[in-house]
Image (cartoon, rainbow over all chains, first blue to last red):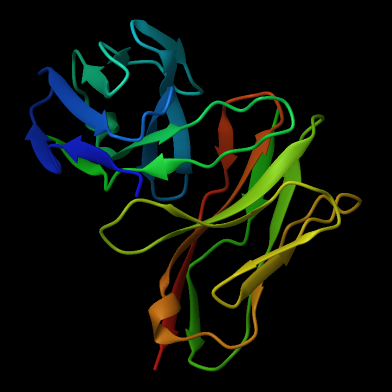
Length: 116
Length: 112
């Protein structure tokens, strides 16, 4: 069974502070993603990575950095947390998609972040 | 750009009644279409996917047909159960691309 583990599961941060959300996968997947979930917006892609030591911007990257030190680990970093970044964050992994082949996303359980 | 639009929630149904969650999409590429389900306290998980136009996907009594002409992928179930209470997401992924595009999600509550 594919496994994506996120830590912490919940966090309270102060405005202007630094927050790091961690993700670990045992799927041996090349691709890893960070999504943000908000009521009324659904799931939006922040950053993704297809190989260690490389990250790519998603649809809403402003205010976020990502780090992929190994195939298994992918972190999301909020250097200066703001109230607007209060949300649930999901990490996911998938296999790459050769042309004509479509694979699915495997999600972690999420991290609930509250910025006060 | 690519986008997915689905029924605004929340939706509340009684057990045994039928469900339809509308989903429409926009893309100039060749997508695979997905339905994901998210139970309380968990991450989204795949319900089913359909890679080809005019084909039907199904799982756990849910089904949807990839209608390329109408650019739609509506989720249906004939008789819902309390255990179906969850948030449902329609999504697309274009062939050769790595990003998924999700709808805003539809929250379903089934009353016994």
